[in-house]
Length: 143
Image (cartoon, rainbow, N blue to C red; front, side, top):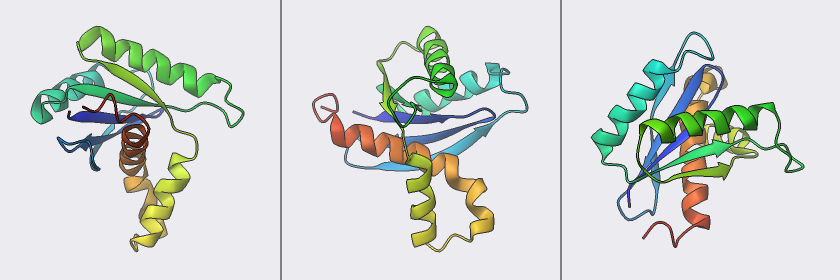
């Protein structure tokens, strides 16, 4: 099953896609917007990516607080996921994304990405981490 992974942020959405076997994920792009609530073009781009990659499900990062409670950012991600599910008729899953940005930064450090360039890639790599995390913990849904 091919999955599309999304890391929703105030002005960006990092995008990753899985391989057909659900064994790994690759960062695809970062969708950028000028204002947080201007999502029409973002949602249209996600629809295009679903068609392009023939995605069969979508995984959206759910930034719960470290104590597991749902805060403002998690509520925004939930609202974003709801918007997607109204436009795209695919299974949609929320994935706990605590510490994914830190993990993404570690991946960049280990791969020699200059610190000044982290912002260029962090959202896309975070989407990849979210998707890989979800696949590793939900093997039943991947088949």
